[in-house]
Amino acid sequence: MKYAMMILLFFLAAPAFSLKPVPPPDIFRPLDVQASENDWGLNNGDMAKIFEKIYFENRSNKSFEQLLFRYLDNDDKFYWIGFFLDEPYYTKINNYELSLKVLKAGLEFNKNDEEKIRYLWVIGKKLYYKNQKAESLKYLVPAYTLSEKYPANTPAWDSEQEADMFEAFIKSNMK
Image: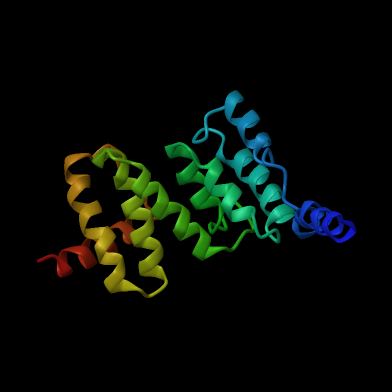
């Protein structure tokens, strides 16, 4: 009986010892507060700084990425957080892999071609600039084709030269 109680106590207590510290699920609450006051796209500089702080405070926790993907529940969150993870204009975060993962998830999240355009362009550009040109075409060609149908959804280019370069690259590789 004595051993049975010890075994029972061990099984009851074991989960408490094996749990790793997990960031609170509301770590992204400051972003929601800011988004409720201003739209993501209109206030992206402030949103970027808030996300940057959350990222640097929590990135070492193994469950951070899982919590992040649970948080991503609308188009703006996928798009802007995908940018914030690897865009020096907005933050000091340099996480290309997670950025690409978030943007690809955002592409899958959107069922509407009109909304997919910006993801296709951004993912294609990221791959192109990482010298993954063949892979970039899988995104750039559909982006180019859809942009002819929905020109208002094409993201801004860094320069006219960049736009011309991508157009020439895409056209030279279209079949």
